[in-house]
Image 1 (cartoon, one colour):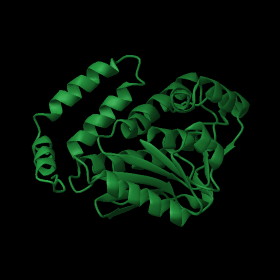
Image 2 (image 1 turned 180 degrees about the horizontal axis):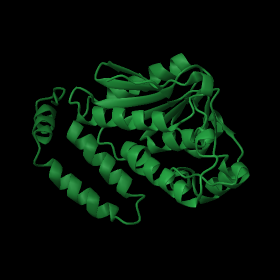
Image 3 (image 1 turned 180 degrees about the vertical axis):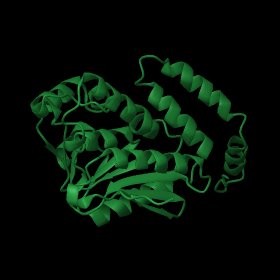
Length: 259
């Protein structure tokens, strides 16, 4: 499969998805969003892929936002279709991916870029990263889940301040807010750390990881009972080969070999 706006690389059971529009600070246009959808769906269906890392090309930006030129003349109905398509085809798709997804944030993650990072299961950043949701300066609000995911990550008060002020925050501030998990000095260190963490994660039971993602996501979904989802997923694990292998390995004092 050929992509115009993404660089796709598979290594050690990890799929690296690099948004490659460096001249546009990796801004998300319609074609890029469509390609991200295709890449994530392909990764979900590929048994050889156990985890996904998303980053941006170059040193300046993860994703500096949506490509404003594409929707500057939209009306109300077109705006609704834009948001719905983004939610369904990309952002919710990533959040509900049964395989772990890490965002490696290098440089600017603004607007749709920060929303993309927040849809990932884990976020890490280089020290030069700047994050924010500046949509109110355009007469808009975040439309790809920012008003929902940000409060869950940093709390309602912080989210109100970030969205209404449109101010950017540094990587260190994002770490202190709980928006990201780690700060690394350079992009190279960031990618090495993201790869190391993912390599650790994908050694675990794929079935258990899938269940954990589903149960944790339910905790922030008011339409679902997270405790009931946890009970259901916990019980389902008992019927899997992964459970039998994990218990056998524990009793035999060896590392489990999950397939």
